[in-house]
Length: 234
Image 1: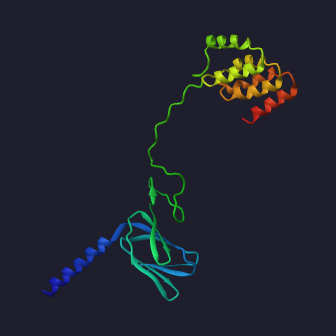
Image 2 (image 1 turned 180 degrees about the horizontal axis):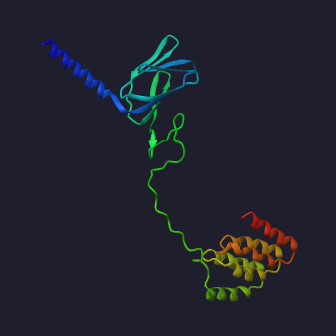
């Protein structure tokens, strides 16, 4: 009879021990706000620190006892609950223990945490988002017929200010090529205005690799140099 009772108790303790010990480790990090030197135990493991941060790795017990001692005074003794493959970040302020964060240790099978309470790098779910199709750069380009119609009305403008308004209006919904831009810029009277508009046209030009050809539309070397400097910075 005694053997049966002893065997039953042994099996019960073994079952409880198995229930409390995980096959995958967790982590427990603690921040103590109150200044001072502390000794912190998690079950039998001791960590000492004077900077207020304590780190316990490879925690297999799902319900360890956390003990916080300052000098000869026990500040706290409390059972906590941890989850396998998660880091539990706690904070002690005054006598109150709170949970700051609970984070997954691994992401995409790689260790993903920094040295306290953050993730390293950007979150990556491992799911590749669909690539958004990019429009053909020429989809906004005016057709030769449309450009000719625009250009005919454009040349009838007597002042540079009128031409600027037309360019701004058409640029909201359409783009020009470098060769079309060259024709447009040649109609301006002053290099100063020509330089200003050349920068506006460049923002939506469909073939920026050819835009250097615009340089020959400038009459004065100074504005030509300013234009080339602008291109160098793009």
